[in-house]
Image (cartoon, rainbow, N blue to C red):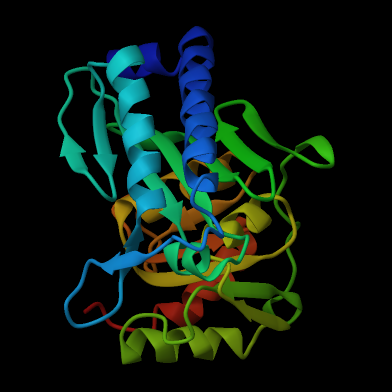
Length: 275
């Protein structure tokens, strides 16, 4: 860790970072809920050959968060799903996904969320998975792993080791990327006790909260996974790519409750060659 990274990760700096992250999450709650389940909500597609929706809620939430950063952290970089990258000079980058699960948002389901992460050269080290409609906020950073919501505040801790045959595994889409990636995922899922689909970022929150054992996905972007990495690692879990390497840049990602079940799952997934 560099001297700059030691400075940005000390307790005083972390308190300030968390205050900013919570301000961003508060603003995104207001901006997203202003559009959620509104008859006037419509969506454009970001892709010509498939429906990849973006709504006014996505844009409004990212704009609200960027306005706060321009005021409070003007020297930090920003990477956002909807507005792209803005370079900074501090060595820190805020990684924003204003609505993770826009398909769910558009459909009126409540498990979409807002993802906020702060990263340095080593990767994301502060993260928030916020669920505006449910009112739950999962926060992770050095020395902090907690959820606040309708049931109050509680510590986050991932599940204890168990065999794959007793594991609960999640992914968002049944096809899980390419045909080869989908085949590898389903080979793993058939060895688990329970498979569930479609929770988007909420699946990662459930893993951090000790409810499930594995989340496995492919084709992710940095803004999809940066916040879950920080939250899950703070709660005692592990997040890597399918070869056990860093997952900060997205791609093929496995999030596991502990090193033991991570190793079991990697043995299955590693049979798939890199694209």
